Image (tube, one colour):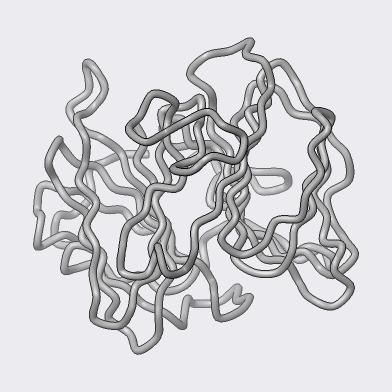
Length: 279
């Protein structure tokens, strides 16, 4: 993935490079019980241009039909987290965790040396809509762990709230159900906002990793108004005064320390947006 993109997409901060990832170009499939989109190569979707982005390996936007789900399966050496948009998601794993996750909930499984889990929609009426996100760990051979966090719509409205952050970061604790961001064993941070019309938030790029000149970022607009495989519609935001994204669209970003991603809602409905910071 090259950072040599046109700066005309970022007139407010011309040093920031942006590359759009339109909704229509995401991978995905409609399996009946599961409607899914893939930002990166996953399952039957493979594109050598989109294998990963730094340690960020998977961003899947999933909708699971009532009484359906992902049966018990295994993972190892991967940080796996779910961001629940609507509905109810049952998580069950080999560490003895069993719970129902709802809107505003984040669950993070640090698979380490290996776990088995299932993710089901036990509700018999409503679809569950969530984002499944995977990041490669910075340390291998760790003991598996599980964490949950909850962030209200009120907290996220017109604020860019850090919901997942590397262990050792500010306000991160390793309690199973503690406050603050969920702790991840990877150099990936996830922020979330619900932007009202005409409101904006800013993400400031931290210092790049040693030996690097730029930090990576990724912006994703959640499909809150419904499943859509065609040109993105619904909520719309403008990034750095140039690039416009609607629901399902995303954008790769590169910036030096102190550069910014400004995200402004330019539509008449709220926009729920995820911002990833990637070392």
